[in-house]
Length: 384
Image (tube, rainbow, N blue to C red; front, side, top):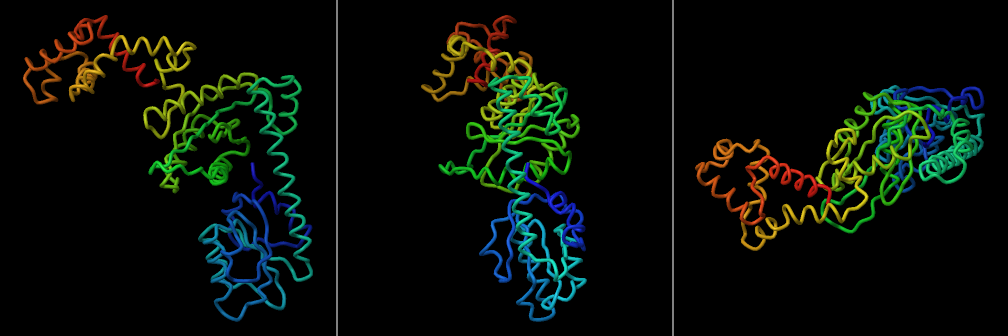
């Protein structure tokens, strides 16, 4: 829950005579820190998501400030503040137009305003925001994991604006490097990206890391807003070397109900991992819900071994693909003619394959009850 540019400078006009000249559409940009930089080699000093102040002491004529502004944007600067005075007397129109184009807020302060006073205030506000963020995340985790007195914890949440009957939707994300490199994912990147997106939709959200995953709780978002968040997330995700697996819980009301909701998001994320999908919504899992929430996983393993285990072993030892053949047969409602048509084989061949499967497994794929047994076996395979 990093502080936004708009909130950071909400009272800047009164305290520091700040003027917002451009980039109004970037007021939701998140801010992590602040720097005073006069050197135009800005990339050496910045990590991204910072506010930069300058007096333009190196301003040597037309075009300098525009090039400086472009370098700031390339370094993912959140907002730009120019101290108007002897070095930079005014802001050129092309700089204003550029900041509007790239949605980077551009402010000015008069020469009488000391930049050190402004930076001190910004640092204090950022650290204060971080403390609030840590406190909220700690409180919701205590509620989820049932640590401490629930009523006391709820009162703490309400002091921050999260009411006891608020709706919560948990989104859990895991990250997989596409080249199988043992690289550690930079959680700060996903923190800033996901929070910026969440903030653009609604004000209240909570985020924290847990078991190498990133957790985002969207609070009082409508179902449409949740879907919009997920769709926009993947549409604009640009860390192409990392694959995201996302599990989305139901949108449930009541802080006391969120332990189960949180676990359901993890269940959905686990399913996304196993199926190689970008996202899985818990409320669309159907029969997988029952299997994933089964307490005795050994029972599921024994069931799979009894129904499909022998067939899988046969395929590996004989370089066949009867598992895929059986799955296609089940997917086509047990229609031998449809399978023959899709596989470009004779119907007698389909019948022979089914007899072979029956001989290996001991179950007849054409029998309704045993067909269901096989189907359930494939569902178990999905969650193993």
